[in-house]
Each structure stands twice: as structure tokens, then as C-alpha cells.
Picture 1 (cartoon, rainbow, N blue to C red):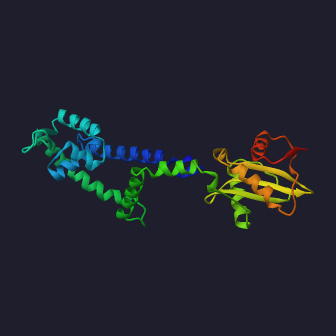
Picture 2 (cartoon, helix red, strand yellow):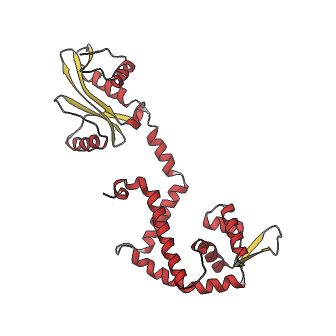
Length: 278
């Protein structure tokens, strides 16, 4: 399976960058074959100036949502090539207006047919059941989410689940199927041996599990596993406490372990419940 399919949305940034690079490379081929000296990076600025006549550096920066310094560098390059020029604004000398030179206007007129043909061709690379407007709306939505820091803030929220965000459940048949997939994903080796299973959930996601059974006045703790990235956040401790409190018919002497698992022993010590290693 391709890493781009296997990694799913985790590789979205890399994939969009790859698509962008390929797209711009394809467009560059068109200008070269048409013998037009035009760089794809110039398009947003020259498109705006062609459409609006003249603009200030700040206006271009705000319109394109690109840093002031990045636009300034671009304008300097275009000015050196005599494609644009800069003059003080008529009413305020502090404001510099950027406009297309005669050479710039001729260049834009030359590339207009390319832009028109390219606009028609771009429809062919979209799936038949997706309209251009719908596709652009999706891109705009993703851009807004990123601009609003939704990705970073949401991810950090997931990473910083507090114990109160974690709930312990006893799985039903549907959740058991999900558990099998989760164990496989985590490369966790679990051999069912009867008894009880409980899960730790953060939202709808499984982040931990425990397998146990009661014997006389003790709890035989067969297995406990928590996703590495979710450890130290209380999931293991919540699983232990749930197990201990589950058998409320009589007091328990404590937990019994079949082997000296250091990580599990640390959780048990933190829980305060008595335990012994068989």
C-alpha cells in the first residue's frame, strides 16, 4: 500500500505540497512551450494588478494573505525586470502604489490566452461528480480551519486529556471488534484467557484496556495496556480503580500478578491497592 494511503490524513501537508509542486511544474511547461517568459510565482500578484489596476503593498499582502516581507521581495523582483513600477500615492506620499508597466501589461496580455485555456483544462482533472465551486469551498474551509489554529489546538487537546476526560466501559460486541483493530494497530500482544475485559475511552477512541478475573478474595490481573502517547494521564489508574471497585460484594485482599511487570507495578503502587506477584 502507498504511504500516502497508509498514513491517511497524517500526511496531508506533504501530499498537498507534492500536488502543488506538480501543478506548478505542469503550468511552467505551458509557458515554456508557448515561449512566454513567465514564472508561476508571479501569477497572484500580476492577476491582482491586472484586475485592480494599482495597489499598495499592504493591499496586496492582505488580499493574498501573505506576509508583507514576502510580497515586498516579489515586487522587488518584478520591478528589476521592469514588469511593475512603484510611485507615491497622489493624495498621500507615504503610500506607495504598485502598477503594471507597459512591459508588464504586454506580458499579461500575452498570458491571458494561457490563463483562459488553463481554466478550461483544470475542470478535466476534477472527478466528474465534483463541481468547481464545491471543490473550492472545501479548500476554503480547510484554509480557514488552519488560519484559526483549529488543527494545533484540537491536537493539543487530544494530547492533554485529563483523567476526567477518560471513561471506563465494559465492551459490547461492536466495541470488541473495535478493540481487535486497536490491539493490532498498537502491536499489543493479548491472549484472551476468559474473565472480564474493560476499556478506557477518550471520546470514542480506545486508549487502554485491562483483562482480569476474580478468584477467592483477589483479582487476577491478566493484562493491562495503555496507548504509549496516553500514558501518565490517568487511564491505567482509572482501569485499576474500576476493577477494584467492581466487586463490591466483599472486600478484596488485592491484585495478583502472574509476572513482575514493572510498568504495571508502578500503576498499582500509585493506586494504593495491595498486590502480590505470584
